[in-house]
Amino acid sequence: KAGVTQTPRYLIKTRGQQVTLSCSPISGHRSVSWYQQTPGQGLQFLFEYFSETQRNKGNFPGRFSGRQFSNSRSEMNVSTLELGDSALYLCASSLGQGGDNEQFFGPGTRLTVL
Amino acid sequence: AQSVAQPEDQVNVAEGNPLTVKCTYSVSGNPYLFWYVQYPNRGLQFLLKYITGDNLVKGSYGFEAEFNKSQTSFHLKKPSALVSDSALYFCAVRDTNAGKSTFGDGTTLTVKP
Image 1 (tube, each protein chain N blue to C red):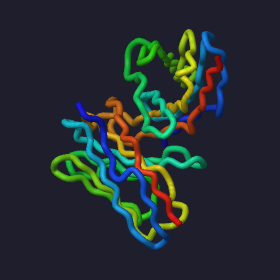
Image 2 (tube, helix red, strand yellow):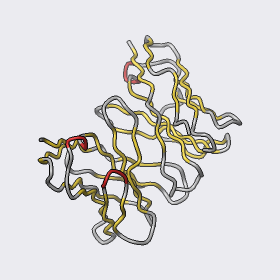
Image 3 (tube, rainbow over the protein chains, first blue to last red):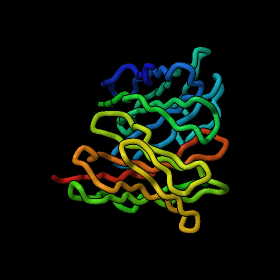
């Protein structure tokens, strides 16, 4: 069974631009979560989707948004990029919506904002 | 609000020695607790989880963790460390219903030959 895939793997953008990251969960997984990983802040929860509905949102500004499609694939969008948005963005999928489900992570998208 | 603390940024052990990576948590209600490992330039991999039942849970690659409710801890252990265990380890707590996971800041484990 294929793992979680994320595209692109690397991105370089400039301040003010916007970016869209894509995540394909493991087949059959309906829950997708997004995290921002930085050396100083660790892993920060962005949002979680289940069956195309956003169930939880972390403490990030409105410039960060996401959505989930009917095939469970998810996209994350960041508008008006800032230097501080440079990070590794990780997507994770899990089988169900219960908190007892472990998450399976993709390799991440490394975003660099210049 | 839920939180996780990993008090050690770095743990160094010699190959063949036992290892412990510490984790304490704070959550309202019953916790779901997880350990993940991250190798360089890769995403996180699930190691093990505690949901309910036996306080000692066994996971991948010979790792185990002990849940201690009174001390609100969930320490990761392995009887005999391997050099290949060197990686970044994250403890996480998850709400019983919602999808939000809160991760600790991570502990870098270095196993020296």
